[in-house]
Length: 232
Image (cartoon, rainbow, N blue to C red; front, top):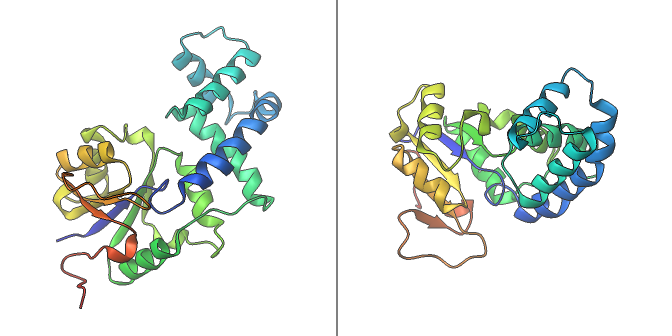
């Protein structure tokens, strides 16, 4: 029986275009000024050190590091210190109401329904935990962070690594078979299934792949959780 839902954000609960066309460009444009202004802050300094380490050049100048960070944004690299910096920059944007976190209405309705029926709900995204909380705290529907029991990012491991899903199950105190992972990315779903989780593939606007190993859904209205819901 499913006891917990673990959901991706980008392309699953929220529009891919919101992340690609709003959040990423906003962070890229403001990153140079933000990093320059906060380079010696206690919260930022270790992130820059981590980024230099990942870049393989501990002597990389601040200007050179900013360029590397921007190139990682362009490449959509899942680099943990970059994701943390993006979250800090996005916080300023959310607080200034320059944009609101996008959540599909069907996703919100389903998450509220599942929560009311006793399911635990978690987020697992490549975006930092800070960025995840910011998005759900500043939606057009208001603050919906009360729906979630916890958040996971790449600090728990890569989303295409089955071990990451085993770690999440261990963190929340459930066996993987009692968890349902929702995503729009097949390789992530493959990893979750290898770890023993149930899976649901969101294919918004795409054609179903009949050969896929995962159940496919056009949106959240089609998903039913065995034991607590039916189509009747």
